[in-house]
Image (cartoon, rainbow, N blue to C red; front, side):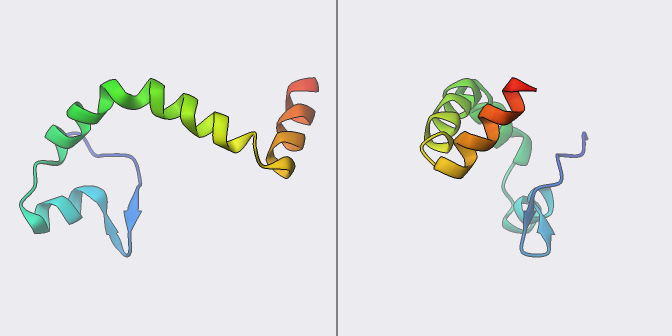
Length: 63
């Protein structure tokens, strides 16, 4: 089984947490994967509403 990204819930990684709850981690990941582009766009749209983040991104893009 492929190890997931290092996502932590408390002291448990996501996969370990799912195993404790007897939830299929890989099924969740595969069902959420099609949502990733929309989630990414939404995240960026909300991020640029934060002035300090927007200014940082402007500087980063200008360099």
